Every structure is written in C-alpha cells, then in structure tokens.
Image (cartoon, rainbow, N blue to C red; front, side, top):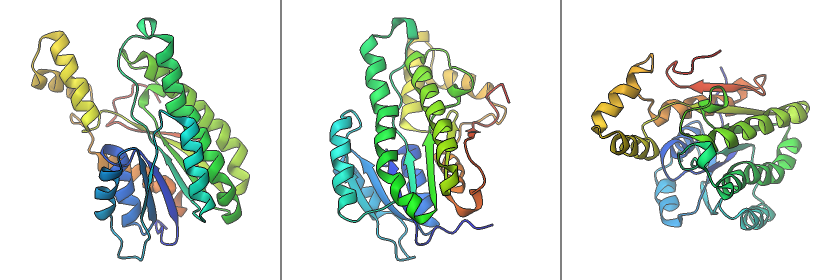
Length: 262
C-alpha cells in the first residue's frame, strides 16, 4: 500500500493544536512538506520545530485568521504567488459555540458560515489549479459526525457542518476527473481542548462532576473511550495518500462506533 508522501506538499489549517496538529505531524512522518496555517505565529513556529524532516521536507508556516475571509484570500494569494503549491489541503477549523439552533443569533450563523464554508472555498480555489497541473490533489475536510446525525445542543455547528459536507460532495463530483479527491473526516469525541471545554460546561450546567460527565459520554461509545487526535489524523493521512486515489466524495466517521446510522 502506497502511503509515501515524499515530494508532496500540504497546507494544514488549524494546526497549532488538537486534530490539526496531529494531522500535520502524521503527514510529515509520511514524508510530506507541511505548511502550518493558523492565527498564532508563536504556536505555529513551535509546532513546526517539532515536525519530522529527515526526508528533506521544507516545512513552513502561514499566519491567517479564518474570522477574516477577505484577509485570508489576500494571504493565500500572496503565498502562492511566491511559488508555493500544494497537493494536499486539510480544511480544519474550530467549531462554533454550543447552544440550541432556535436560540442562536443570526450573526452566529453568518460567522460560522464564513469561518468554515467560505474560507474552505477560498483555499480550495487557490490550491486546485496546482493540483490539476500535477494530476494529484487531495482535499480533506475535518468536520463532525453531526453531518450524519445532528448532535443535540450544537445547533449552529450542525447546520454549518452539513453545508460543508454538501459543498465537499459537490466538489468531489466536479474535480474527480482531474485526479483530485475530496473527502470528509468526521471525528467523534476526541481528547482535545475543545472536548475538555464542552465537558466542563456540561458538568457545570448539570451540577455534576467532570468525571461523571466523561463516564456518561464514554458509555454511549461502543469503544468506551474517547479518540486520540492521532487516530483521527491517521484517517486523514490515508485519504491524502496515493493509496486512497479511488476514494472520493465520502464521509469517514472516526468515532469508536458512536454514530447510530450507516
């Protein structure tokens, strides 16, 4: 099975922590040159220093704020104008705040739509021309299992993640003829700072301990544990590899079996 990414380059968004960082590390381990993209320059530099580079990779950073799509477009356009090209694009952005859809302010939907779908579109439009030229492209979107089954209490996120999933499937149909695949990785409960925050908030609202909330959540997962970010990264890295060249337009849950549908 060909998982070798030596000679390939990847742009990995949201890569200073959690799943994004784990994906960047896994791609580097497979020989890929990785450009880390997030808004905190110091953290980007710290992560870059820890990436595997024994295969002669040229790792870089790109400072960008997904809350400002217009600035993101200017940043990526200038970056590519300097001669940078990408075979792999990992779209990954932190989820919107929790809460019921009916209670959410209209502005919350607009902000989330910009941070997720609009920014994904900007990056895809920027990176696809080089992918077409290379006859090799992999766009992997880190979304959520909510695209299969909406998660209670995540109204804005459920809505926007669903939009991104349909955008992704549409792109897969349009770009497959050029050797470009577009797929989604759907993490379940994963041991990240975001999950810790969700658990802490849930514990406070329900007047329970963090441990009690964790135990309840784990009891709903057939694997009876949370995922490690590296396990989600492994799925994303496989989809980015040559071995996954005929896998296109799919959703891959990495959730320990929690999602209750096919």
